[in-house]
Image (cartoon, rainbow, N blue to C red):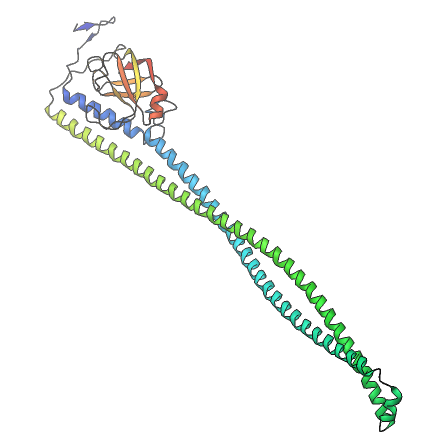
Length: 356
């Protein structure tokens, strides 16, 4: 009943019933404080472990920047490795081409030597057949048939030289063919080794190229996330500014039309406590007072907690009674959270809140 008297004898003056505009001004003002508080370092609009939405977004933006920097450094390292792998592959391909040319040259030389060997063997065979058919040359007959002694010696030397040259030519051709075939085998072994190394280098280059493409795609996704987060931060800033402007406009209208109000003398009993059932939720939209939903917005039963009342909620932080709901009846409140995971973590619990 009013007026009342305290133990000290000082009378309390009953506050006038709030007009709708006054409640809206207070609700908008407290909403602006809650939203702007998220932009201020050290602001505690949320309970420990539940940073404000803007603080969370800025933390996420910093994390994305750090991940982008690490991914970019990784891309630089991949580029260096890919450059080396492609260089190795190019050198191996050049070496393989040179070996193929060398193999072609050796095969050609083997064909030439084998042709020479066949010709030498044919000439040697023809000489042996002639000797078999005509018999061994008689030195005495050569001497008698010669016109002079020098002519006889020259004929004997020519016979000996002819036989020796034929045998030497055949031996050299055979030796050359053996060496060339050994060289061909060595070149074939080198070609197989280079071919294996070339395949490995090509596989390494392909794997590095694929990893590089994936890293570029990852960087692009991080850039999209950073742009989206920056857009969210900007949207919160705009929303906070609009709330402040709306609160200021309503305040001016209220002050211009409101009659003088007798302010109650604050006492120790100004703040009271109330035990309620608090449920977490996470939905977009606007409150019953026109505020955009945000951290610190509390849905209440106006018959129990007047709209615009500032609340201290254990485990959640500071809030303002700025919303209603068909399921919010009696000593129940709904607390807004930025994510569904946060709302589910809060769940439904009984708490004793303080009304200011």
